[in-house]
Image (cartoon, rainbow, N blue to C red; front, side, top):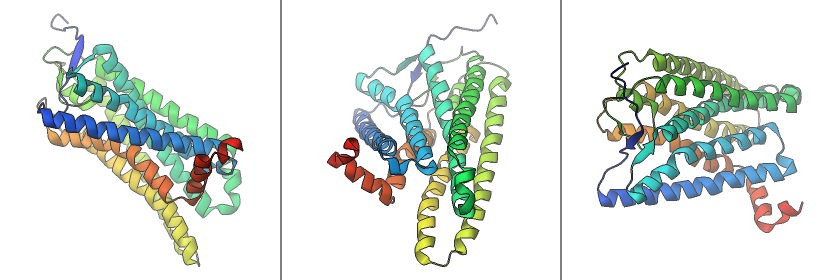
Amino acid sequence: MKNKTAMMEFILMGFSTNQNMLILHSVLFSCVYLYVLIGNILIIMITTLDQHLHTPMYFFLNNLSFLDLCLISTTVPKSIVNTLTKRNTISYFDCVTQVFLVSLFAIAEVFLLTVMSFDRYAAICHPLHYEVIMNRGTCVWLAIASWVGGGVSAVMHTAGTFSLSYCRSNVVHQFFCDIPHLLAISCSESLMTEIGPIIISIVLDCCCFIFIVISYVYIFSTVKKIPSTEGKSKAYSTCLPHLVVIVLFLSTVFIAHLKPTSGSPSISDLVISMFYTLLPPTLNPIIYSLRNKALKMALGMLLEGKLIKK
């Protein structure tokens, strides 16, 4: 305990210190953030204002868009400000907050994507009982459970990470306070206080992934029995994009937390972390909007002002 030093701030090294790379980073991140901001806010507005979209699928999509907006807002704006001001420090309290919020939104998104796969399973495999299975009360409770599950996991991760001592270095080779990189610079001899929550999260993520895979096995086996080609294509266009997002999101989360992390800079670590913090919020508006006629029609009505008048 005598060797334990109170860490007042961390240094987020992020990307290259080369001036051209810093400009490219700030411009790229600003464009991505602006796009995600506009895309997800539009989805939230459309699914809230249009009465025809008050169904379980769009209710969960509304929640997913809000989670994506929160997840990217936790990391990207701070990174942009640091790049523009050339000040890479983050206070200890802000780092704790960032770890908590990233864990909350990322884990809640995993649970919500699992719930959305169950919703698609119920809609396609049990269409006659769909309204009974996915009634309003069930949808609300499933959404609340996703948020609560994310919150409990975030508390465990944050408490486990910051119960460790940081006395060797305060340099984090990442563009945000990422748990694996914080563990890499910890001088605590035992990391079990945080390894435990990571193992629990990995087990839960594996359970979610297995549940999703089983759901889609049943979904695709049911879709094959649909006689019309139009019905099959509609089912595939609804389910396949959702499956792509899940695979990309979970695979990068697994890699980020299972890959050995060193205290030295690594471009692969930066790319992996960008995948699970930036890719889902960026892809979701494209996947769920461009291929969805109901959303495109509602967007047209919103732009014409008809949706707000209604």
